Length: 265
Length: 265
DNA sequence: CATTTCGAAAAAATCGATATTTTTCAAAAG
DNA sequence: CTTTTGAAAAATATCGATTTTTTCGAAATG
Picture 1 (spheres, rainbow over the protein chains, first blue to last red):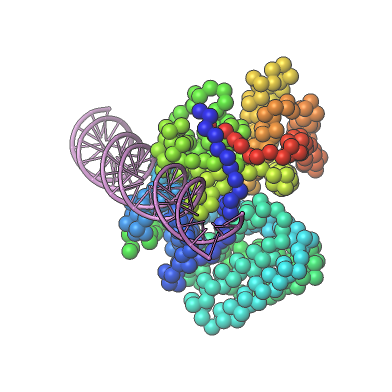
Picture 2 (picture 1 turned 60 degrees about the vertical axis):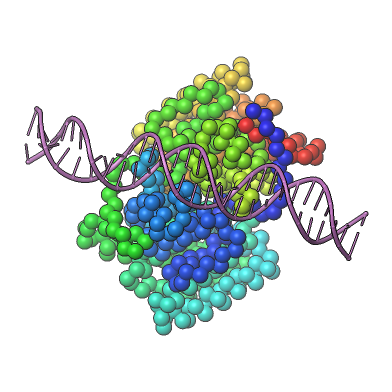
C-alpha cells in the first residue's frame, strides 16, 4: 500500500473510441499494420465481421474456435471481446461466454431515434463552431462519397463496402467540428449499430437509393450555408429514411419463422 | 472455414451495462458475491476506486502492481481495464499501458451538458411512459434518499458514500420507465463520469447542499404530477447546480500549479 | 555542451496450459 | 410421457511464464 507514481502526459492516449479505421475485411486481408496491438487487431477485425454481417446476430463466439481461426491467443481475444461488449456489439452472460448481439425491431427503432437525437445535435454544434478547415473536410468527404455513389450503380458488389466507408466519413466530417467529445463518442457507437443493421439488410437486397444521394447533397449545402435548423431537419429525415430500408428487410425476413442457424468465420 | 453453430436464447445476457451495484469499496470489503466472475469483480472494484477517487486521475495502472495488490491474474485485470476503457474511465495508448482518465474543466463541462441533455430526455420519456410501478419505485427511492440526507448533516464522513448510492438510485428510478435502453446506457456512463468529479471534489470539502435536497423534492413532485416540462427543467437546473460545486473545487485546486503526483492503491 | 547511441532494467503484451463451470445426453424414477 | 439425476464432454475462466517493447540513464560522439 502506498506505491507512488508520477503520471506524465507523454503522447497520445486513446479514448475508448478509436479513429474508426473503417471496415477492412471483406475485400482482401491487407491490414495497414502500423504498430497495432494484437488486441486492437482482433478488436477491429471482429468489429468489422460483426458490422459486415460476417458474424451474424446471436452467433456464439467461442474463444477457442476463434483462437484457431484467427491465430490469436485466447486472452487477447477475450480482451477484444470485452471491448466489443461495452460497444454493445457483443453480449456476455455470467460464465456462459459471448454472443453477437441479437437484432430486433425495437432495437433498430431505438438506435434510429438515438442516432437522430445525437447526430442532429452534433451537426448543429458543428455548424455553429465549424471553421474553414471543417468546411474543407466536409467538401472533401462529400466529393469522395459522391464519386463512389456514381460507380455504385454499375457494380454494387464491388463498391458496396467502399460506399460504406465513404458514407461514414462523410457523416463523420459533417459533425467533426462539434466540440463535445462525448457527443461524438456516443454518435459513433450509434452509427456503428445502425451500420450493422444496414449491412445485414444488404446481404441479398441492393439498397442504397438515389434519394439517399440527393439527401447527402442537400445536407452538404445546408451545412455550408450554416443553416443549422434546415441541416438538422434534413439529417433527421435522412437517418429515418435510411433506417426504413433496414426495417423493411427485417419485417420481410421475420415472417418465415426459422431457427437461427449461422456460420461463424 | 464454415463452422456451424446454433444460437439459442438461454437466460440473461448482459448488455455491456451492468445493473450498477453501486460503489462498494471504501466502507468494508464485503462483496455481495453471487456467481460473479473474477473479471466482473475486478471491473467493479476498479470502477469504484476510480469513482471514489481512490485511484486518482492520471494514475498509471500497472498490471503487475495491480496483480499483487488485488490478487487477480493479469489477464483478468487487462480484461477489466479494457471494459473501463470503453467506459471512458481509463485511457490506453499503444503499448504503453493504462492510466486513469485525466480530469479537466472542459471535460467536466462536456459531461455536465451531455448528462443534462440525456437525462432530461430520459426523464421526459419516463414521465410519459411510466406506470404505477414506476411511481412506486420513484417514491421508494426518494424516501430512502431523503432519510440519508437527514443523517448527512450529522456525520458527513459516515454517510457520504451511502448518500452517493441513494442519490444514484433516485436518479435511476426517475428515468427507469424510459423505454430506450440506449438512452439509459449513455445516461449511466455520464452519471458515472459526473459522480467521479463530484467525489473528487468531496475529498476535503463537504459539499452536499440543502438546496440539493430541496431540488430532489421538487423533481419528485413534478414527476409524479406528470409535468414533464417542469420536471425536466428542474432536473436540468439540478444537474448544472451540482456540477458547479465540482467546478469550484476544480478552479480552487488548479491555481497552485503542482506536479501530478498520486497514490496508487 | 548538446545530441545521439547503446544497453540494462522495467513494464506491457502475448501465449500455452490448468482448473472450474456449464452443457449435454441418456438412463432411471415418478 | 415428463421430470429428475448424474456422469461425460465441451466450453469457459483463470493463472503463471515467456516474449516483446519501451523507458531511462550513461557513455560516446560531433
